[in-house]
Image (cartoon, rainbow, N blue to C red):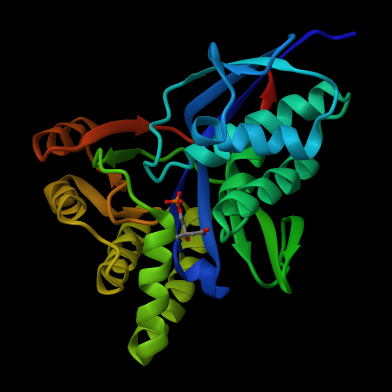
Length: 311
Ligand code: PMV
C-alpha cells in the first residue's frame, strides 16, 4: 500500500475577461510559477499542517476528502508562496492539490478528471463559481473559457444548465508582474455588486459584452506575441472593470504607478482588493513602483505544466 503522496499545483492570474465570464463571455487565464506543494501521509487522524482538520480553517481540503476519499485518515502538509484571497486562485490551488493527491492515491492522475472534481468542490463551497481557476491550475500554461467550442478544446464542464468549454492557449513567455494590494478581496461580494449594476443598467451589460470582444482580440494578440496591442487591450479591459465598480483605491494607485514602465496594466481577478497585473517594458521599474505605491510585487512566469506529482 502506498503511504505517502505529494503534488504541486500552480496559482493563476486572469489576463482578460474576469466578471464578463460570469455572463457567458470568454476569458483568458494563465498559470503562474507561484505554487503549493501538498504532501499527504496515511495516519490515524486527519490533520493539516499539524492541526486538526476543521471546516473553519480547511474547508476546501475537508470537502474534497468528504466527497472523494474514504480510505482512511491522512496527515496533510502544505508549503506555498501563494497569498490567500489575493485574486491568484489560492482556493483553487488548495482544492486541486487535495483532489490530485486523492486521485494519485487511487491510481489515476488525469487532468480532466481532477479539474472536474475540483470545480465540484469550489462550486459547493462558494455557491457560485466558474471552472476558470480550477481548470487553469490543473492544466497549466493558458486557457480560454467560453460558451462556444473552438479550436484547441480541452474539456467542457456543465452545471445547472450552464456549459463552459475550456480551451488550451499557448501563452508566450511575457514579462508580467503581479501587484498584490495585501487587501483580501471577496469574489462573492464583487460578483453581486456587478450583478446589481447589470440588473439596473443597460450600460453595464454593454460593457460586459465589450469585455468579450476584447478577450477575442487578446487571444489573437497573444498568438502574434504583439505586446503593444496586448497592453492597449489590458488598459481598455481595466477601464471597463473600473466602470463596473470592482476597483479599489489601492488598485487604481498601483495601475497608474506602473503605467509609464509597462505596455498595459489591469485589475486581475474579482477586484475590490486582490491584485493587478502589468505587462512590463521594464520589470525592475515596475517592481520598484509597485513597492513604492504600497503594493507587494511578484515577478511571475507562465507555469507550463500545471499540476504534477512530486512523488
Ligand atoms: O479573484 P478570483 O481569483 O476569485 O477571480 C474571480 C473571477 C470572476 O470572474 C469574478 C469570477 C469567476 O468565477 O470567474
